[in-house]
Image (tube, rainbow, N blue to C red):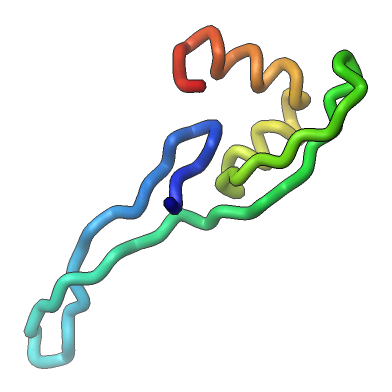
Length: 76
């Protein structure tokens, strides 16, 4: 399923709008990437399916701090 492991982002629903203003349903998928992260405290690699926004957050704060924050908030 196309869901971010950290942020929980999912596909959104919207419309394709033609030039004549006809509307047909479509889905907006999140930009998900399969990414491996190294956790130095555990001395192990984990693979997560995360959105690019989550990757930027991990790069800014670090993987352990980000995982700790999401666990504390009850997201994962």
